[in-house]
Image (cartoon, rainbow, N blue to C red; front, side):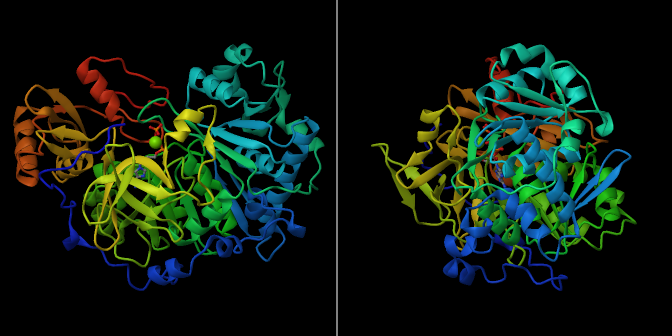
Length: 603
Ligand code: ATP
Ligand code: MG
């Protein structure tokens, strides 16, 4: 990663600026959980946050699954819907009581299979109920769980099972046949494979065990053993946007962060119907697609189908979703389809929408207001941080284009690296530097699996360095500039790709844009943009000139792209992030690097 360089031009004005602040939606159905940011931050401390949870009975520690499941199964919410699963043609609801019994079965089954404290359990499945039971049951048994994204090919799956030293794999019959069977000889450590049959039926493949039979034989009574809050609980691989994915390890006490951020950043209230569109194969789909809604006593909606904008609207309406957590790539897809697709939909239950994963362009935030009557609330975090770190809150002004303010209990800063390899905190507003977090929150990663040196490089003294560049404004809002690896240095200017992409997105013909630095003998680098157009617009020379002109007017000649190429789609990771490094490698004719997480790739 390159250290940030000073920007002689001071090209610091955040896009959208303060003129376009979006006020909180008046008259919301419930008062926001975090109404007074300053007071909450002042009074906040981690022991008090932990006291929001129960802990295992008898002071036997802290276990994620106890907080998510058993605690509510023993309380007034026992018979309410905890998990509402919408499958392809099948629906299923689990109350907290049912969820407790079924996850107890899983924990018993793992014990029967001889999987002990710390054993590694991998789950490779689409968003089927068994995945959720497996994750929570394995946490009860104090195994370490790693959900894998089911659309990975055989090689990325095998690589992760190898690095993660998997003891057990729970997967479906179809995925096993297609993606695992042929590579199983590479995994001598893998003791068992448990298969979920088609639509939950039994299976009899050689060398595997049948989920259905094991579950039937397992009892519904299980006492979670004492769990040290520091016990390793979850393993999640990063998205691989900037290079080879890293396996980030999280401990059971991460649940404190999941709970608090669900409450404050996503504003979850007990009667909410919450929908997180991320797959549990990515950290968002576990922290917020499984744990946070359940600990907060919220009905967690799980939708099996692959998504498109029409399906989203249909689900939001039919299931009366009240809080929706999605990603910029989804929002841009909806924008591409246009507002007309929303006409006649009754989305009156919806009261809060949030986005994560990539910078959310100001255009997209404001489109939320136009189309849904409320902004998308951007928030920022990473696989490594385990939970949301910076957010636009329900009760606070949203500054479109900003990631928001740090969660209570989180200290974020902008740092500059000095000549001697140390770091200095930037205290003046709107100066670029590396976004850093003061180490010590509960869901901070405890390491990268088998990559000690890479892990150590993330720290400077008390600071965890995020690898992202940002600025902080005078109100304490943080503004994303780009990943340190993606930032462009052109004629002495430091140019954040996000700023340029957002300006291009303001043009009515642009569906999405990605910007890279292309080496140039005079300027060092020039800004080159790749643009996908909305349907009905033609990629031709006139359009190119129009976009170049638009960007120059909007950004000035020094920052605007010099070149624009059109693409039908942009390459993105399976977690939905634009892979700028791949566009750059191709542009320069360099090797493509690790593309195990690459999804769409239509040039
Ligand atoms: P890798 O570390 O393997 O390159 P990755 O960083 O994309 O992959 P994740 O942990 O899934 O893996 O993503 C975290 C990163 O996503 C952040 O560091 C940041 O660059 C980006 N990101 C997430 N949320 C936001 C946001 N709200 N605004 C801007 N960027 C965001
Ligand atoms: Mg990263």
